Picture 1: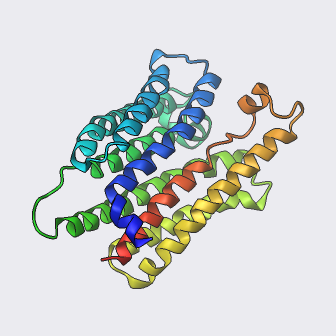
Picture 2: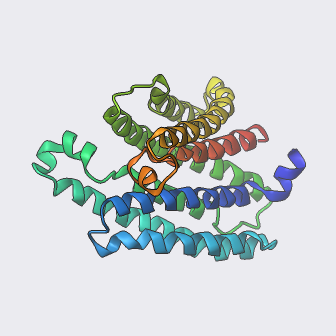
Picture 3: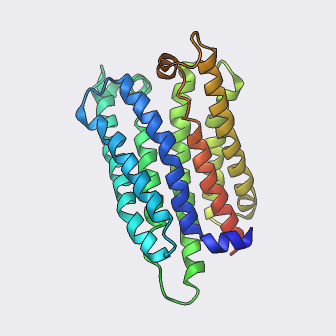
Length: 273
């Protein structure tokens, strides 16, 4: 295990993690924007940009030259960050355009466009940028970079888990939390926020829990994906385009898995320090 981690390095593993998050994100965006009937042309932007990032990132991931791989991955990370940031602004504007505007923020944030979704995309772009920075030639620079990357992943995960818990809370509230499992993301998310923040501050118990809870998040995301697929299959007509369109967002729980993978990597490399 240690040899594999040494050979690949934290930076490359993070870049691969970012790439793995793109396909489910693209599918979810496609379904949600289709529900919105693509009312504005910018709604097509992520559907075009994300495959470019995925393809370009995959090609750079196959490059064994680490410096060249980073240099080539960097513009794709910037594109991902930009698309997520602009999408967040559009979604916030969409909330403000709902009846009552921001004065009716609680209702409009639940029924309007989900602004946490593109913000999470921007965070993936940010962590991709961290993992594609130029390498230092100073002695022990690899260990120093690992410390920086671990700190960056923790900071990103604190924000990402907050956004994820917020969005899951709104969506599951619409379903009136009819299944106890629906409380998982709204409890596990804040717990991991606290653990990552405490681990970043050097609290030893938090550093010990970080890997375990992150692994739990990985599993919980897959279980949530299974629940959503099951709910789609239980609808009349089973697995159909209509049920995928109107049913629960099948791939949304995989966001929890993606954040969990980054947390596991941070915990593994933190123990090597």
